[in-house]
Length: 347
Image (tube, rainbow, N blue to C red; front, side, top):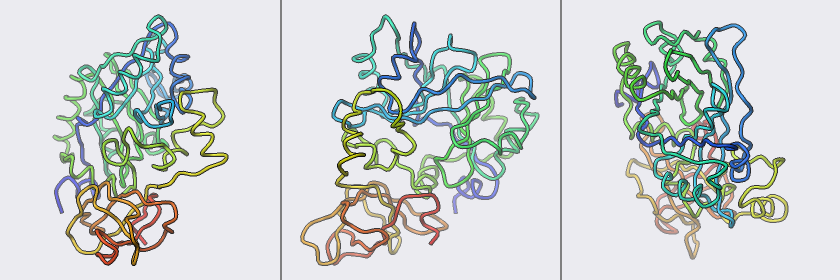
């Protein structure tokens, strides 16, 4: 078992999220402009804590940005400025989706009302994971002045922002991993200092490969593997988290409503428990026994120290889950397919 993975299970681990990027949207009406683009509502304004001076509480909105045909441009989290709307909106987005998102915003957002800027160089992100995460983030050495119980009470997407005298530090509960975790957003210098202090306090560095194992264990899709420019949100199972069916119009809404009310998607994200320890490559075909053509393909595969070989995949809708599929051919190695939900590999 690798050091970072073990620390995420039993202690605390920390990772600099170089796979993520930040975009700030400012101007006369950034909220109004993004309401017509995002599949979810822009979150409400944050509120000052009644019990903790210098602390603001809020909730991010996980959302998707779509083309008129309902295909994804990006998935992202939207944070409304903890210091008021003069800060605009901060978008936390997969780095691989950043160029497409900026191009899309430049095409659909009138510059006289709002403008989007890549602020990844100025605003950094860390992930702190493991059962010791709350204790680490509440330590006096980090200077955040928050209680572990406050962090423990946060639901996914909820955040607290601490005024540290500069740009402040935002700590948000994440649901991306199979262990308790928090995303920390701060200016680059503060984030680098927090990472160093965290490691001196016992946090173990968490590698990209270890993060990926914990993500697959959580059954969460990621941009560049399960999520691409060809994905429609209901296929990936993110519609419950990313789509508000009660909000006003947004680009791609007609396709989403048609799927919800009258249709279906032809494929769905599924999780797989594989036999053995040899991992299939992304794109490896999936079959049913005796079938004449493939019914899906692998998108991510990892070797979990506690669960063995696991994968995420897309399978055609007619393939029942839980059920069995074959890898590579109709008589290939068996794999158990199931819903990609929390704790899916435990049964």
